[in-house]
Length: 234
Image (cartoon, rainbow, N blue to C red; front, side, top):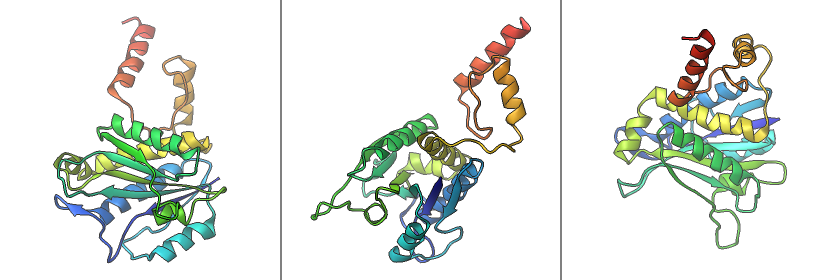
């Protein structure tokens, strides 16, 4: 399978700004981290940009359509005139009956890392076509397309999270793990953690194998430790 990561804005196009954050820079960090995450799986991955370059709408669309991926995910971050507006949003194709499942999974994952779920939505223009060109000009029967807005740079609470590279890594994993589940991807066989993962599954400490770079909640960690202590009879 093939995935295109469309990294929004870039070059002369800064995108949104606020609280000393510039959207194009955050998008690039998350997009590259997402690329690295998905590269661990049995899937072809490309990005529309991997540096601070300007891409016209036509060039961006051509990069995606010439690749003809199964899924295109556009990475963005939001802004609003009202400073209280916050949280993650996902926009999906209006006429696609499947990609709203991916949208829901992404927002659910974002909530686990501290970014509130704002909304999932579609938007149509006066002709009844999808409003956003990165969906309208890309989505078809072969390619699903969504846009992820990972939080508001204009909101102080969101911005405090988005200033942390550690949080951006969690964001990339939140998006990436949802894509993995949505497309049914499998890990490549040469990952360093495979043997260790298989061992703790066989010992009953966890139920299923996971990506070694997935984030773990304190509840999950406590469950594993409790099972280990039971085995050690401590």
